[in-house]
Structures are given as C-alpha cells and as structure tokens.
Image (cartoon, rainbow, N blue to C red; front, side):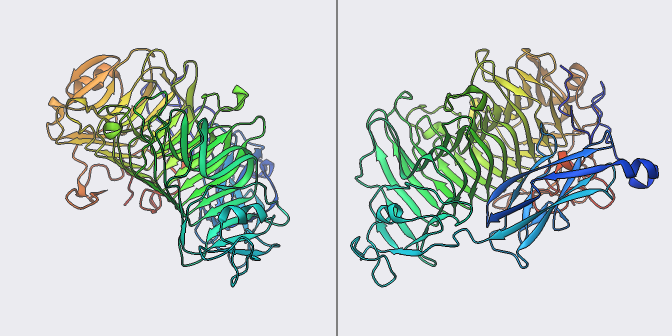
Length: 622
C-alpha cells in the first residue's frame, strides 16, 4: 500500500514521506504550442433531455497529456448554480465522472451546457447539451380529494377518493394532484413513466398538503411495507409534497416504511415530503426494524439509478436496528441534497454495501453518489429501545459505500458520523468527505475503519476541510473529534479543524488499533482544546499519548499542523457560528489540493479557494 488517497488523481501529486502534498498546477501559457494542440477532450453523453431535479452522470476523456483531470462547468460556471443546474467535481475513484442535478425550474432558455475543461490546457474542453423540461408532459392531470369518489372521472370538480386508485389509473406523462386532507391508505405504484411521454407524478395539490396516514393499517408480517410502495422494475416516477406519517408495528418481522422502493429502475424523484412517526416498537435487533425511506437495489445488473432525494424532512421515527434514510444494494448515481433529518433513534443518512440486498455481490453497493447541504441533528441510539442507552447512531454513515462525495452538510447532536464497513473483507472506498460541519456529537465527531477485527474497513478516502467542534460529550463514553479504527488504509486527512473545546479529557485523534501500520496521512489540520498543547490527549497505533509535540514525533503526522485556537466567530449563538475570524491561524493556512479534492464552494457557498490561490483550514473560506 502507498498510504496515498491521491493515486490516479492527476491534479495532485502523491504525498511524500513527510506527508507534504504538492499541487500540480500547469498553466496553459507554460505549455508548448504543439503540446497544447495535442490535448483533446470528449464528453459522454453528448445530448440529453432531463426533467427538473433529475440526476445524470457525465464522463469526460482527456488525451494528449498525462494530466487527464477536468474541471466541470454548467453554462460557463464552475460547479453550476441553482438556475441552470449543479454539477459535482469528478468523483474520487473514477476517470472524470461527475453528477449533474437539473434545476428545480425549467431555465430560460431551456437548454444548458455541461462542460469538461482540461486542467492541463484550459483552452481545451468538450460540452454536452442538456434540455431541461417539465417532468410530466404528454398526459392528463387527475385529482383526488377526501370528498371524492372513485366512481368519479377524477376531474377538479369530480375528484377520485383514493390516491391508490389514482395511481392504478395513471399512465406515462400523467400527474395526480391530491387535495389537502388525510388519506388512510397504502399506495402502490404499478407502472412506470418513460422518456418520451414523461413521468408519472403523484403530488400534493399546489398550496395544500395531502397527508398519508398509516394509523391502524396492517404492516405485512414478512418484509417491508411502504405507505408509498414501488416494487419491481419501475422508472420515471415522482412522489412530491406529501406528509407521510403514523405507520407502526409491534409484530415480529413486520417492517413499516414511509417510502419503499425495492427493485430496479431509473429517473426517480422523491421531493419535499415530510416523513415522520414510522415505528417498530419491539426491543430486539433481530425483529425491530423500520425505515423512513428505503431505496433497495435488489436486482443485478440492473440498478436503481439516477435517483434524486431532495428537500425532504424525515424525523421522529423509531427505526430499531434500521435507518431513517437507507440507500442499500445496487443503487448508482444518486443525489441526496437539502434534506432535514432529525430526532431519530438510529442512523440518519446511510449509504450501504455488502448486505446481500443485490443478488450479485459485484453490484451490492451504493455508489457514485453526491450527498450535500443536508442538515442532520438529534440522531442518537441512547433513546432506542433496542440499544439500551448505548451510543452508536450515525448522523451520516457510509457503510460499505464507494465513490460518494459528502460535502457542505451540517451534522450536530448525533452520536457520530462514519466512513466504514460492517462486513469482513469489504471496505468503504473513494469517499470524499469535505467542507462539512460536525459538532456536539455524543461519541465522536468522525470515525473511519471497522469497529472490530471481524468487520471491514476504509480505503482511499479523503477527509478535507471539515470543521469538528466539541464532540464526545457523552460522559465517559465520549471519545472526542476523530477516530481511526480497524483496517483503515490509504486515507488522507487534511485542512480540518479539530477542536474539543472544553472537553479536555477527550481525544483529538484516537487511532486505537495497530491493525494497519499507516492508516492515514494527516497534515495541515488545526488542533485545539482549552487544556493546551502539552496536556492534549492522543492515541496513535494503539499507544496513548499526552502532549501535541509527543504525538507528532511518535506518529510522524501533522508536520504543518498548528495547535492553536481557531477563533470561531460566535460559539454562543444557536447554531454556533463556526466560521473563523480574520485573525484566525486557520486563515490561508491550508494546502490547496486542487478543485477536485477541496471542492468548488466552502460550507457557506463561497469560493473554496480565494483569489490568491490560498485556502483556509476548516469548512469556511474568507
């Protein structure tokens, strides 16, 4: 192993033995004219029509240079914007693959460009044409109301009574608008939309909220049952604007779910729904399972792909040994953005692999995703009847996922967040975790590696430009800021603020196992607590260390990392303002690893690198 998370990342060089990253910046004016002319960029797909808020992967190929990295733009803007759509940077572990998220409204003009620009020669690029259109185009609009009748024609003046009846009648391109009121029913969606006619859309009537309430409804005695259920091969479906609530069971083997998709298909959107009080009340992990949202890719090689989970709220669920939002198995090319996940007794957002959900182990892994600008809080297993006051619920959990960008999220008052794998011989890999805020975690701010010798680990993941503050608050069970567990290999941890603040008995770095001799490279981080550098606590390769100087000499890590108060703007505000003052030692003290590593924007949406090419330590830029 090379102990470098930057293998095959042409915009950067591998770290040296002193853990210094040199950034490879090649200016076009320095290239010979002949060399510039040889650079060529191509993009795929070249032309695509997408619905609003649809997700699509693009890939670029660069020839004629050893630096094959690209910068992604939408209509000339690096990273895009809300009007024309957003695009990720290249996903770690791929050859120039990025995910585009179409805007919420059709832009004017409706055609935008997605462009890959060569980093070796920015005069060379390739563009794709994207036409953004409304989702349901060629069909009819049907109406449902609590005062309606299923013998009606489904018109505004004579609506149907049941959402499930309307779903059974909807064809490609049709929209079902549900008037405000409470609907005590289970909805099955029996068919797909298509690329020609458009989506089948089920939505609350504009300006009203339809409530799907599961009170008293039967949860199947075996397997998962969703208040909204999609099963088999289904594509081009939108569920939007519903309140989905009160679906509960105390029957062994019964799994209530708010929205349940098990199968395969593409172009699925779950938008602006509020899912709460989904509960399994049993107290044994072998039987107590419920989920707010389950996306299970149960086929192979056909995946659930191009799925958008956007602006939903998921809260106050009792999920037992399961999760609030779970993308599991053969799920590829997904976006989870602008959601609010809170007040749950187990994992908030979970991207999972190796659970046996897909029948083919080669496809049994959530992958190629973009998780950004979510707010996750009050997620703790201390209130879970299964776990009996133990801490272990992740705000965000990559459990065996691969090639996922996790950025610009706020996670607080959870037990921890984690990049790991629970299955022996398998790892989470190529995860980019950047520009996030994590604070007030009960157990530890962020952890990587498997929790025991009998499980998997973490490989080629990058933790960069995050701010972690005041983590490990749960008495003697709380650890501190950053934990490394079993089987962590080839990982990099750069430009982060780790500040345990007043928790002076907690660890800043806790690498409690020597299962791997070099689990990660750490540098350009800012460490701090009120006890001071000499009294600070560390653990490296299963050896407890007191004092920052001794930690650095013992580990060989953090050669350029200060131990200094980051000077947060306001720790008394709610939420705390974890931006740093202009006099902070974190200002311009990071190392610029290139846009594909550090990202386009900081946590607040400002340019991640300033006009002079400098970058701060932590989640905020000046």
